[in-house]
Image 1: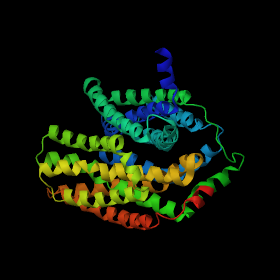
Image 2: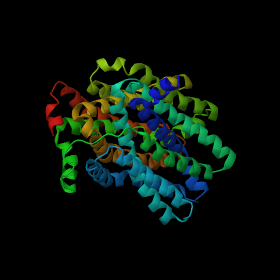
Image 3: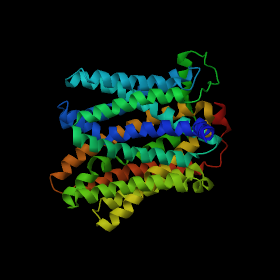
Image 4: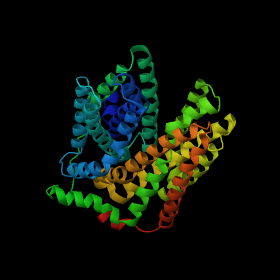
Length: 406
């Protein structure tokens, strides 16, 4: 029995799943609770919090390709995991000793680069190592999304019991645990020309965008994912304020979207293998146009449940299609770099720009007591993503050999 259990945990896919679940448990604490810590423990204003959350997205335009080029020169795939997890841990330790906007902002900016550099490495490891047996990628990624919910809920309880510094303690604990998880990952030598100069590796990474299909993938999926910004900024506020929905029901509605995402990834990911990645991205684009346009009408509660279930389309289908296509185009060796380029040059800046726009638009519209029409701004962005997704879908039968060779 002991040998069987040991063999189970020795599976590469199981190790990668634990790594991803740990990362997303931290992610689940970061997204809803970091603003609380910044406001209540550090005394940041709303504008300062918005600046901290948005500027990191723009910084990744430069930092993403640089960290990808650095990672390409390492001899072990675990090297970026160690680096970024160590930077995060050191950053949280430093935050115990500093106060003031400038110092905290500088440290968080560096940590933001490390955190978003860690995400594509974790995703790539999950894609790569779940190819070799159970769990399959859809199950593993669904469990990681469930860990996001667990992290958010658990930290919420801790904040209620111990105050805002529980946010700092949780995120520091996850960061240190990620270092241990990186050491537990299987040793994987990196194949390729590691001896190439840093500038050459950087040019090769950015040069991926010369492939038109990859560029269409990057910017269509990036725009579609960024349309969630208005919902993240104002969704709960509109429900509990203008629509008079109770906080409990609003929380349940929010959870319904995450449950739909997890269910899609765990139970439907294998079924969706019959569809091309381009088709999944197109489904995500159409879902985004429908979902945000409908939410702009401030629909009744019964319709909100259906629109929240559409998170399986707007997020999960788009995400799954993008990850599968990146893997198919670039293989195990280049997928981490391709994901860093995707997040640095499309996903991160688009998310940052739409977040800034969403915050300003909500502030403007709430003065008249009708903020729901702000979702139409996301519909416009979704239409742009849809146009690119249609162009990508029209190229779905073109061979992928050129991208892999590059």
